[in-house]
Length: 377
Length: 197
Image (cartoon, rainbow over all chains, first blue to last red; front, side, top):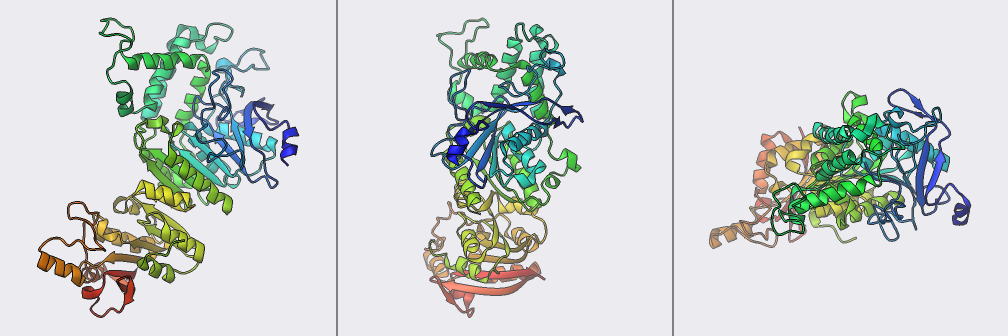
């Protein structure tokens, strides 16, 4: 089987395919053609029961455990995915998919619209988290994978994992939802709106039609800076930077980056614009803001999971104020009411929302045990 | 698997095979794992301590981190065959309300607790003149999770007030079963099987 897989060009690093059918969007439209960029690690077993889908966050990508082609950095979740890790290519067939709307190979606003020969830009349809998941399901059809051993994701990846369980309960045996939420709060939407307005206020944005010209990098950098603050905790920022000055002994009485925290944020903003498309940032933040899993169920979240056989594992972090523990608890209560098998832990970390991407031995221990228990049943 | 604590062994013995069980204050899931492995029980747990939850989940159990005092209200009526509260009642803020939830959520409930009227404790209190520190209750008064010490007679009186029926009762001293004669004086631990009248 492993030999067969090597010859199967659908599997491996840096894959891309065009989905056979259109994706039916929540907006009512049907969208085609849709290209999907993805990677797989490890081999599918004989009964195709070991597939694990990893879903990425807002600015993440399919390079979960392989070198990023633009930054040259290691994959973004090598602490969770890799040899000897809870999600292990020796045991699992791991699939990671660049979400629709993004800019790392899957169809997004920077893709060429075949009807015009130019980039879609603002002509790209407004999509939702469930739309992203529908496109992923079509990719799994293409890979010949009917059932997932698990869908695993943090942050927006967790929203996808929840949507998978709600949309395709029969295709998901287990779902791992980390530092996530079943809906965007007013505060979440507010922060995203700041980011979007920063992009749109950049004159180079030009109503999205900047492809072939200079990109609205200043606006996108500010958007990233604002968002980055929400990924860290106040205590974490204080510990890392305090009021320390950047490469100087005294305040400049000007508007240079006097403080280390300013310099850090500027760097975060600048390095981001090299790898991310501003319009993708608009579309994906919009999808997150539209996310409310209970909305199609009269506002009752438990109904989204009625009769589910999927096992759930939720993890939150005590210093995460972007998607605080209360949001995970709300999901847990809904799953309890739906009679689902659910586990939940709030872990302690000083690192805020970003904690799920960092070293967290307790998180790994939980995910490992949860997945192994699912493999036995 | 290590041997179950004696009060848990009694509960494990009494739970019907294939039942749905909620273990409130499940610790690292020892009882749940035993019930799952020996009686094919569908067990769910609630536990306050994050490390214990992590251990239980890594054993493949479905456990939620939460607080018996605040989170039991979320569980629907009669959603489990049994609700279990072992060695946890004395640590809750409102044992009476927790008890009400147990017999609401479970069609039957098991409650076990250390008996604060056992003669050694009475002696320690009477002659030592200080809060008793025993093998069963090893904590100093200022640093103990046990904030509502209870005796077997107190518990029976609460059951009466709350209109809760006793379906079974077991008493232990020195980890060995003993009869219910003078249980309030002689038993170190009590296990009750309860049902709402």
